[in-house]
Length: 372
Image (cartoon, rainbow, N blue to C red; front, side):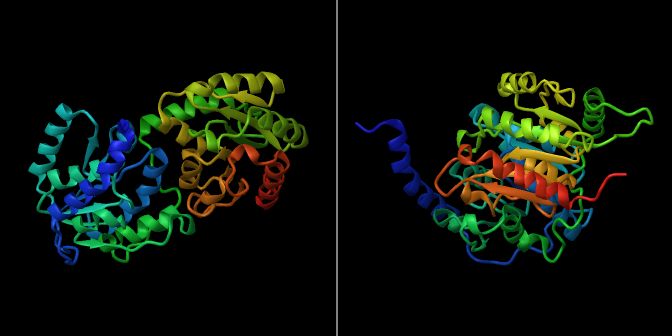
């Protein structure tokens, strides 16, 4: 007897085909007179950070009087609260009893157009769209089995060959028209409470000179990557910082170590092993928005391929990143000075030599203007 995962895999394609037939979308242009637009975005923190320029472009194109609602995954919905662009925020969860009232509330909004920024839509999000906005015009991405649910869909190049921001821009072009996407940095404004909390944390870890100004640069070093294939070993971090910290003494004032709560022991062990006054550990933060705001206060962010790459991009902060080979183009820092080190094709980030990351850091620092 097939296991549960195999049965789900076998049923997924015919169910998606049935869903596309049920939608029955016929090609038609995006309604220029739509007064209520629903934007759908599946993904994590980094995906939503990259979505913000699209939302701003859409707002610029349609004007202040058009209602723009946003549907995202429940675990990351809090990050988009008070974003200053959208009118209503909806969270898609997996609990049916909580989902029904949310879908009914969305139906009452009677949105006239849906912009699905999920370039490869999932079955569950497609069901939500059809249930919440059955009569709306729908534009979206290039998932073959779900093309039938869109009145307009865009053909996209293979994922590794195009930056994620460019994918979103092409998908949204039906709705945003010629509005510029991500010409302004910073492109994400965190709520005042988040900024205040980030300021307090920053002041607690960054030493100030007697004049009240930083005497050197501050580097934020992130250990957490979320996925094992994107995680750099602890011994590599120790070797890297054992080289960089003394070599940049006087030019870099503070090296701030940060991590997810689960990786806190790794951060503590690294700080203790280095035993340098310039190397400090960031206090634990439960709100990712505070971490993202802190990235915008650093001079350089050194991180694996994770949400902090995009938080730094949003704030215009230079990045040294390391990633797997297939993500070099699609998830690179966007429109900021950066150096990206890739693992050999088919290998994980753990295969990246310390010497390559150190050389990338040196190259990036050489490009930055000297501090007074």
